[in-house]
Length: 580
Image 1: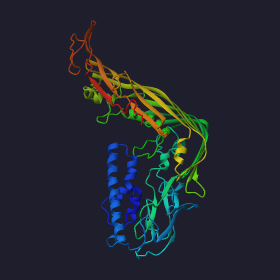
Image 2: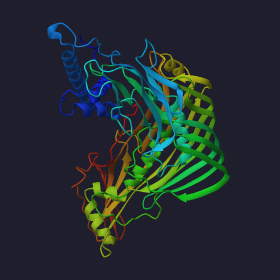
Image 3: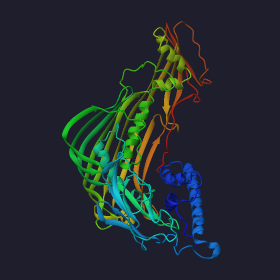
Image 4: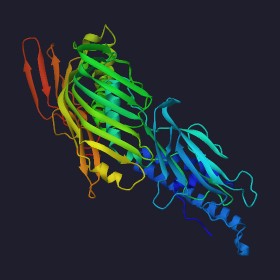
């Protein structure tokens, strides 16, 4: 007799509770790879991980077949006992309950089309994450007919605190895998980020599906079989918000950003283990922003946050280019202060958002009303790119050396700066939901997809470059082009939208595209105040045209430079129509 084929989650549950010898790394692959596949962005890497997970599942199914064969004594045509794989034997029944409400539970064996997953909302802190407690309890059992030690019992898996065998009953802790967004150095206040994050999270079907979940299965003489019970932990959420006003951040090339705000309104509620109490009455504020920590990773995000983060990250990246990574900083030749300002007009309304456990049910209840978010965006500023330019220009090292030496500085000069300007907007709204049950039924995803949702976001920031260089009597002038060569400037493009699939499913897409920057020399001027003029083409190829002008004391020769001479400053990123 053979049991049904296990999937990855069932294979992990069986492997944790089985005494069968297992191949090296099989258990780790079953436990870790589902989540790794979920967050992996490289298609090739994702395929490789999936192949390794499939192999581990196949190994687990083979081992379980051997385990069942040993119990059922197939060679002699009879079973050692009358147990059936995956069915009650010495363990007749067990439950997983919400420790705060015993009416919220799931029961094994699962009846046909019955609930298998207990959904919990997490609000108590545990290890820095919101948590909840589940009670795992054997409710009916008898002695093992084969007298095997340690059965019947329950085998938990993927709980946060303890995954040891449970003979009768015990409470175990689950934590939500959703991390609150990284907050350091962001233009949006933490309370606004949290509110917008939860709003976006609540209406995504993927929030409630598709992860490796804490689980428990029966340990019996025929092994664990398939079809244990699951726990899905999600952040507790109850929010109200009405906020409007302006926010700003100024990004500098040589010091930490400064932030400003002038907001009116409030946000109140609870998210996970956080209490939100944010209220402003319109007074202007300004402060130095904390340094953004490079090691701070955000496991989850939403399009509403990503749109602003993409813009801020692009401008932070531009500011980071002001220092060449492979050479000492050259003395700045410009008199402006390198800085870029991002100003955001914000409107946030949440009449009511609540995600809670449903009484006498293992499912959740989601309530939404009066939810709307708007952004208006403006970007202006000027940034010095001298170091980056000198690190890429053939004569750059010599110019840098002379600029650093006061005695020789007069024989060299260079400038390279970018002036940026742009605007954009975002509009996001949700239809009202009186109460939507989310959980074990098959129709809740369709109901979630039917919620009226509007989302449009767009922004373009244009950069205009000024660049020139002088070394002794030679002066070079440059024009900047996008890497595609179509403009005399460059641009950053950002976007967000909601599209419907062929089956009516809703998908949120985002766009980020940077055109890149190439400097092309268009003229070289050689100055001679001693009566001699020498034109060289060492770096600019064949001269296409030359003109000479003179006065009683000086002479200047201009050579139109070959278009083959290029100084690539920044590579393009993304694709022009790369919605994803």
